[in-house]
Image: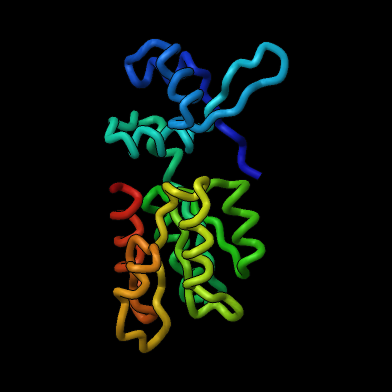
Length: 187
């Protein structure tokens, strides 16, 4: 299990160049996701949520925090896609692999990846249902989704309309897949 990295309101304020009270206002207005500690009620902000907030508001992401969001969940069971893992790791991407939708759901909640690579050829998975569920939940609003379209898929636009950020063909080259993932993570 990965360690949870959090920021105080003061640390978040220093990154943004604002007073800590401004950060507290963002939290109280629901603009920045945070939780309260028992007792004094101090706020803590998960680094992933803070980076998503910065990106959503077109604010610069500090280099030391940007690397924390280069985490990808690969929802696939094919050996070809799993073979992309070393290439992604060489590019500085942390990769988790889930072979079914239940494991993927648990990993989305616990490890908070920046992107989901969804193999729609995975048995028992309806890609459109997965996209609909993700896009309907606010905690996954900043999650990037790359869909690996079924073999022989002619109309990739329907995946984009359903909420995917990008689509690649199932028979695409591994280097193309890694390149597309890196582009989306850096966007």
